[in-house]
Image 1 (cartoon, rainbow, N blue to C red):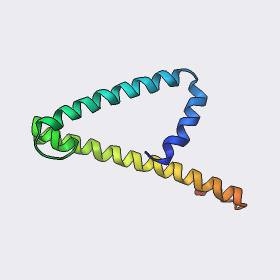
Image 2 (image 1 turned 90 degrees about the horizontal axis):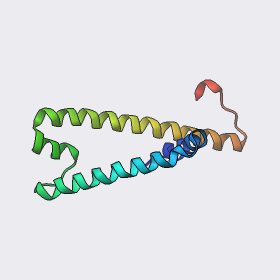
Image 3 (image 1 turned 135 degrees about the vertical axis):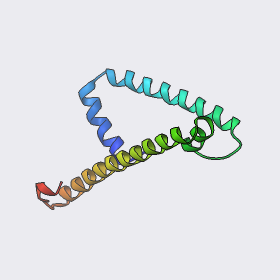
Length: 106
């Protein structure tokens, strides 16, 4: 979990109000179902691996390739959000230290 998660959650809670707790419950339930699915797959496949390996064993190479592309997209989006959170933190630290950075830099 990256730094952007903690920065953006506060802003979303401020804007959404009580609906955010319901969204967290739905997210937790979907994570629980995913956890049970992967534990079932792990007990049936005698090799260690991740999502790509499981999909390759059950659905074939084409679906595994689509899964690989989606995982790469997910990792890219996660890295971008972490970079946003990290630069926001650095900007705040430098601002409180007395350094004023130009607006076009962020």
